[in-house]
Length: 440
Image (cartoon, rainbow, N blue to C red):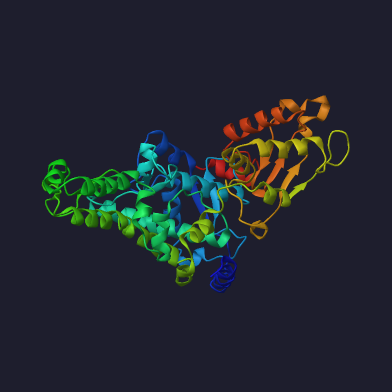
């Protein structure tokens, strides 16, 4: 089935199962400083109390919200975000930033959920920017219960991302997505995250061709019936496997058990995420999806499409010469020249600075509002020089106040400075922002 046909069915199903209710009426209090302490002290939030992810999970549970809570209509927020201790007023910006920060936490040691895939750790093979679930083998029952609870909550957030297009910047490979759409995981999927498995399989095949039985048994004597999981844990492939060498007679059994171990490694994690996802979206239709369809629905497009962004951009305001800015204004031309020169990562930083998210919707219909490039009068009022000012963003409204820089190079330097050092939403000096700042 072509994606266009599937998308029509999918959107119809989402619409029929949406809940009107009163989106945004639930207030979720999040301590930015508590979450920052976990990261700074390099701790792991096993108790599920300190990270933004865990705080949000408990806030929603405290409000006794069911799956229906997440089944909201597009262009709505499921809750209002209050960043305790920060001057922030959630008209959309803090909500989007929370999703961005949660994605960072999920893919870090702050939470016990994901680790870099073996290829990332070893700088080998494909998918070196990908993360995979952490093994739950050998955990205490309480720890495993908390991990499953977190994976289920992550599945609910995935469903919320689908319904509202507030994408999550998750870097997860095919082997993680496939079980959620009932696609079979193959040995190739394993090798795509762990080149060592491919090398081992190649070694076995070549040794079989080049050696006789005695030579094979001698060479393979140090190799035991053990397998290395994606997070580095060594486990036995058969009972007592750590003391049993591979032989010519058992080489097929080794390949079979290793393949089964690694292709089924994330089944339990995937089932937990799917349970959460199924409370938010009509999961029966997910079987029509390819794994990449689900990934794009949850995460958006990694590549920043400049032509798409241009088509959804509006230029506003009067310049210092008294004329209305437009696409022919020099600094607007510089802006697009700058964006074309930037790497995709830098473009994502600009989008995050202006909108509180790192990825664009996949098409024009996914934009709730246009990107607005506005005049920045404070950068030239009273004879000031625009080159000395940084751009100003209003993330709730996807607006960028852009000074009339004199060159592309100066614009690039000021933009990168702003994107690097001005990441927090802490400048809403209205009554709501001041109340949030006073909270501890």
